[in-house]
Length: 293
Image 1 (tube, rainbow, N blue to C red):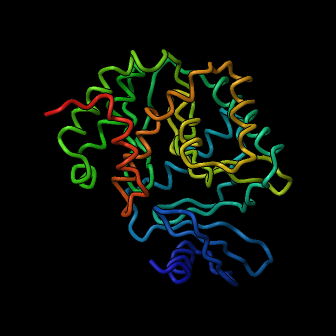
Image 2 (cartoon, rainbow, N blue to C red):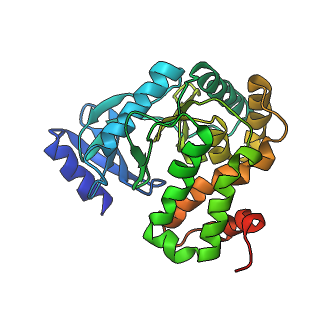
Image 3 (cartoon, rainbow, N blue to C red):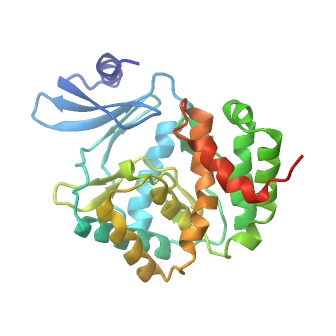
């Protein structure tokens, strides 16, 4: 979908016609995005689907932004308009390349994760990870929730079936059976759910702000693993150290990351070609659980 004509069409259908210029914005994979400059001198950020993965995809995203702000104290963009094909948000800035910014983000995430504890895992509706459904069926057991709704659910995706052989799939099933041995018991809390580094933005005065969530109540380390997966910039090293201090995170968290990161690697395999090495990473993580056939 060509960015400028598509966004202009969606804006006109929504009744937003005072458009002077549209700057395409790179970085998103599921939707077409742009910075829209209006005749009154203001600007807004716009996302549009060529064909939405669900009638409620943008509504679920907007709800996620709202709950992160209201329940977790996270700064998120203002929601200006949301409908089936269009999401209009206030404009944020790129993250500044400073350690001070990442230290502030550590405080933001630590507060979110420690102040929103919940007795169950899931969410009241499914939402979207890229263009694939994130299944949020409620579970009392975090290991069962993560196994069924964050790992094994990807085995039904066509590209995952083609990429992983029978031994790979059996290894993933064995890993899921052993999750209670491999991961500590942790409570559920509200999580962003798609926290790769590109979804960390900044306000005009330099405060951290988050975009593009896929929220649910699950383990806090899921957010940490996602941020760790995507190679955040060098100045972000202070984030992980400070977050661990603020939350009492034990020293073994780095060793657990490859297991938690399987979810996003499987999501990449399911949706994108090329897969940026995701198949090789998944196989390396599954190697200890693989048996000779």
